[in-house]
Amino acid sequence: MVISKLERITRTYRHVQRYRQILLVLSKYGFDNLVDSLVKVEQQVEYNLAKVFRRRWEPTETLSRAERARLVIEELGPTFIKMGQILSTRRDLLPADFVQEFSKLQDNAPSFPFSEAKRIVEHELQMPLEQLFQSFDEQPLAAASFGQVHRAKLVSGAEVVVKVQRPKIKKVVDVDLEIMQHVAQLLERQLEGWSIHRPTLVVDEFARLLEQELDYTIESSHMERFAWQFSGDAAIYVPKIYREFITTRVLTMEYVDGIKASDIERLEQAGLNRHLIAQQGFRLILKQIFVNGFFHADPHPGNMLILPNNVICYLDFGMMGRVDSRSRENCADLVLAIIDRNEVKATNALLKLMLFEEKPDRNVLEKEVAGFMDQYGYRPLKQIELGKFLHQLLGITSKHQLQIPPDLFLMMKALTTIEGLGRTLDPDFDPIQQARPFVLRLYLTRLNPQRFVSDMLETGALLGQQLQELPGHFDDVLQKVKRGELHLSVTMRETEPVLATLDRISNRLAFAIVLGSLIIGSSVILHANIPPIWHGIPLVGLVGFSLAGTMGFGLLISILRRGMM
Image (cartoon, rainbow, N blue to C red; front, side, top):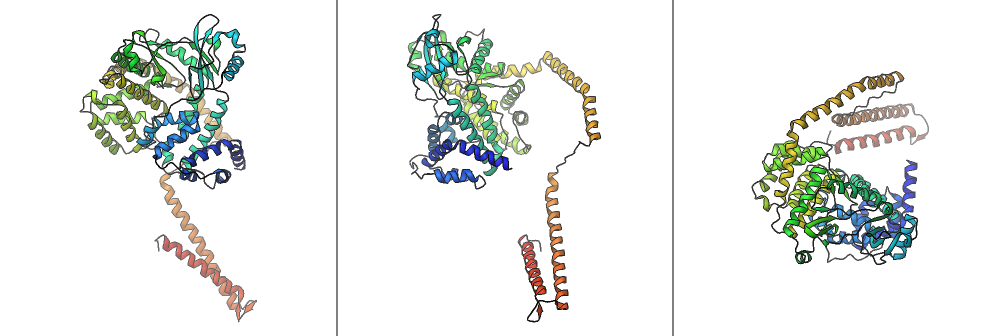
């Protein structure tokens, strides 16, 4: 406990400047109540720091709470902006107005000096810039929260772009993640209802995603895998990477000249087919999710270029998602059950997809799912907006304290982002019709006899392996029994109220025995006239009776308060 407190103090003072900045920004936009609710007296050091550093600024009264929250995130910088973008998909955690505001967060940032970019490139690649490149544009093509991109030409003559990580951004992110984890722990422990949503798990998953984004060798591996998966698909193009010019902080890849996917005017001027681009964009994301199980988790228009012949080129592979085969099949079961209006099968599929500590009331959940299907089951598929469909489904899961695994949130984010782009390109875009073949293919694959035989063989092999290991496990148990190391722990939640009642009864009995003994002892002292004497009354006996009276009155009050006379 002492070590834990010392670690907390050390952590607080190590990040005192960042804590101070966060408190000031929260106070600036009128979130004093949030700070007060998070900083409890048990975090004494942080509480005192808060009182020292807080400054009362007038909140912007013309803005809504959600708008002020977005401004806080924008002012706190890259890590918080990334978290806000992730939270914009979490309608199970945030109200609709917050989700809408957080969706406006843009990953834009001012560029940093070319001298810094040059220093980083030369340090990472261990050579002067002039020996690595024929030319290197000092003005960046684009700047984002974690890095900026420069156009360059290799000595070989290849046209490339060089992505350079911001100076010291890793340290900033590490500090912010530690603070986020600390705040998440406070939310779980101190604010009612937040423990259900497990904010610490959200921060853990966010930290994993940021770790990938901050390591450009991981991003280059993502690009290689992505290119391999679509090697035979002419509708997609993945830029070539140059491994010898890649480190954790520098990424060099082929320069691709294309049109931004949302630039409708330029697309039309180039004679490209918006209807086909919308269809192919959604088909590609469905193939990534339901066939490959490895998908681009941030396919917004800035990360997609359109090339001649309506070819789609993906950029920025830092944030990728994965969905295992079982989750993909459960998703297919859920969609088909909703189409068939079968609430029992839909509920089964939903429970298989979700995480939960206690199983919800099945009857109530089925009624909720049936009501949800009534809203969508009789509409033409073209009229169904996938984003609203998924977000309303999230509302049901949140109401029943069901948690969606992090990668499924990334999947939903990718689908809704592409759907939004598709409807921008083509007002008649129909995402459900596009998804139907992929869902049916997954469902039919599971009914394939070869798949059935393969699953049975795999299950049999696993069972055989476990049977082979069983004697060894049994021997380990016997050895622990011999050494007295085997401990059995049984928790029976239903007995806790009974045990608590018995504990109160035993305490009252003990209290009553002490009280009776005090009265009897005081009586004996009074009759024996044991000095000291005060006005003819033994003083010790008088004190004993007074103490007994006080204790008896206290016991009576306690019983009356509980209504158990």
